[in-house]
Image (cartoon, rainbow, N blue to C red; front, top):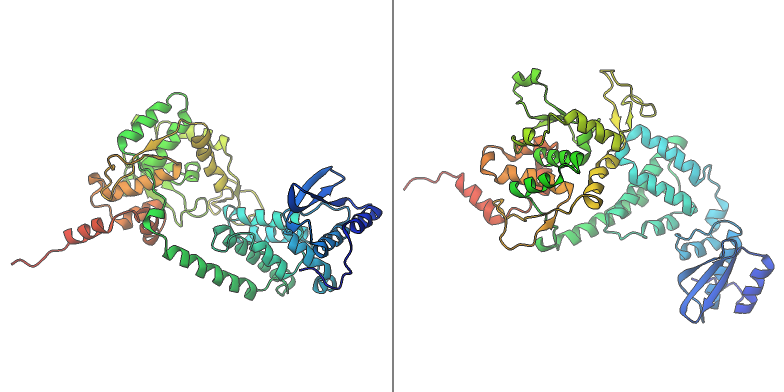
Length: 448
């Protein structure tokens, strides 16, 4: 809101004052748009200040002139809401409270805190938010930080990510200075997190099954036709896609897995299984092994014979960043049995095959199955992504007649997550009718 204590000026007076100040920025208005614009005279660029109106709005335009004076020759924080900039003009709390840090030093402090407390793949969003806050240079005041949060829809994942980032900043400051910052308290964040959770649950409650993403789940025939079409132009990609579908892997796990050594088959593991390292290297909670959905593919597509060659090539295409599990600030030294190392860039690793399928490989469309895993006749086929291949493995384990005896518990363990996650994300498409049929088929009714 405009400050009523400021004596109103005319448009020409405001422009004249800015000219006399030799300010870097100048207000502009045009009959082509109802919104005020700003011209950066240094870069000879103009940008809109929407929703600030350019006509019949002199008190607020005068506030903009004061913002221009305050910013001086600095870069205009173009992503920061103009309303937030106006609030700064009479913000006595910000003027009178000196902090021992800047956003740049906070970024360093928080990143050091993250290095000691969480895996690199979990830091991606927080690093992006730190860079954004540093770029916008928000004052250390909760009302303005809250404006930054509300740039994102409150029910959205990005809103939650920003809350998580602020919590890590709060923890980093608290650990360093012994007290939490006055402008970012635990109560502040807890209150907004409760509002976010409540709003998100309300939306989810009213979502129907028709609003859920329907995934293409390729049949064996469709998968083999596609894989065969990739040879010989895309040998590495063929191996990656076949491995993902045959073992239900996450993309980044291709960098870390290895085939079961013949010397330990006597321990109960079968040849053709692969071992997936646990949380030190992957997103799995524990080390686990996976058996193949289609054992014949191991020879047909050279999954084992080409394993070392393809995995090494893949690691060159997207290089792993491995830190010491003992001290994440240091690189991992191979050969130490007491230090498994921690992979810091699994998201980046996984994006390689995703981008290849999206931008370089022939498009792949496949069938949508019903609750029995049978393709729906006449259904529009869906474009396949790497994550659909992990879904395919899970669904085939639940519906393929060859997989009788493989329980949800066994399948979940093979995929590296708990049973509740397995049922929530990989079998929610199963119809209630099919579930009831399964339950009924396992009940032994009393004889007449």
